[in-house]
Image 1 (cartoon, rainbow, N blue to C red):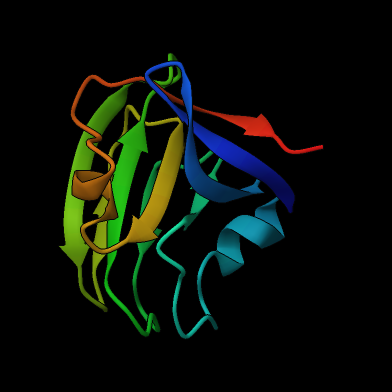
Image 2: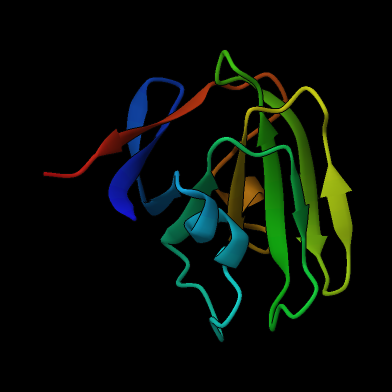
Length: 116
């Protein structure tokens, strides 16, 4: 997986990303992790659907279109849920309530910048 920094409204944030671009990485997602640090998230690309079956902790799920605009935000998603957004190109998975804490809203632009 690539390591990157989340870019929100054109500015680098404190959120460190794992970028899952390969099929196996996307399928595994956050499964098997017991927690996610407050300053960590997972960017899945391409992706327009996620599930939380087998998850050990609640997450925020942010759907992003091909222009990097936020289409939908599902907050505090519990285990055993299935979410999808047909127009999405990417999905950002974060700790529960992290989207709110970071000030991410519908229509915001999100991107990532690879770390050296």
